[in-house]
Length: 171
Figure 1: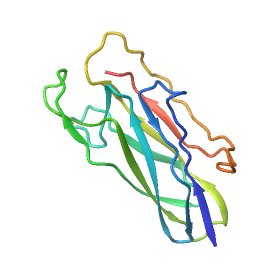
Figure 2: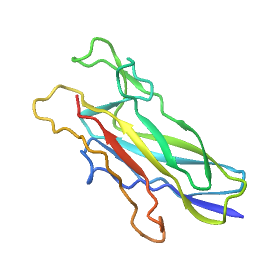
Figure 3: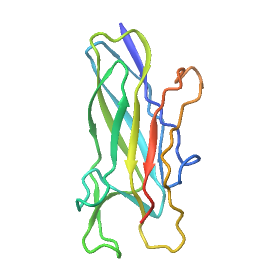
């Protein structure tokens, strides 16, 4: 028996504050008890950065992908890329950040009792965008939201998600 899971993360640029976009990962499939990975492409807007999953100071908000619902999948660890240590004029010491394009890798195990057919995982990506240089006119992003997949080519038939964005006002 094979379970096919769709982890849909449509572009968040059009419906978000515009600082970060999570792309749609490829469909993953696996037999019961099999390990599967979903690569989630992420893009941070030019001129901005987000704190890494291991920020330099405890008061900084880390990038964090969490799962709200995984259906027939058992969530495993999320693998984050190696961050950059960047020195910005507004910070006393280098910050552990992500910029540009990178991938998050979500690890799952297909449950032993997984039904056959499509499934979906629902997650939330939390981050805090900041301009790499201080600016005087930045629009804050205060409202969490959900983005849902459309029924394109049979993918995400059940409006699966999946990542909702929780952004804090840019620094």
